[in-house]
Amino acid sequence: MLTLQCTALERTYLGYLRTSLAFVQSGVLVAQLFRLQHSLNPNLTYGYYVLGIPLAATFICVGIIVLSLGAYHTWHQQQALVRGKVDLGRREIWTIMVLGVGVSTVLFLFLILG
Image (cartoon, rainbow, N blue to C red; front, side):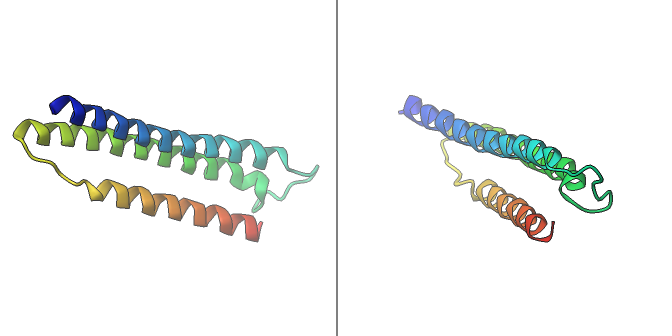
């Protein structure tokens, strides 16, 4: 019985890892696309060329946060299993959802305004 639960924890951690890799990959994509699209005289105050690096860094930082939350969740669940209990762990899911919606909204606004 314990081995089935540990396997589920490993799969859950791999899900967190997959989500964090999606954020990091989006950050690299934003960095490459925003830096490639510029004119000979780019706007140095606001535009795709200027906002590409900070926005990409934000995506990469969110990916790091998601992976850290996944590691914490896995550790917390393992400690609960040792005590014979299970925690639902909804805080991590809500945090990832808020971060994802926030970063996506900021990216959308920059694309509309840029």
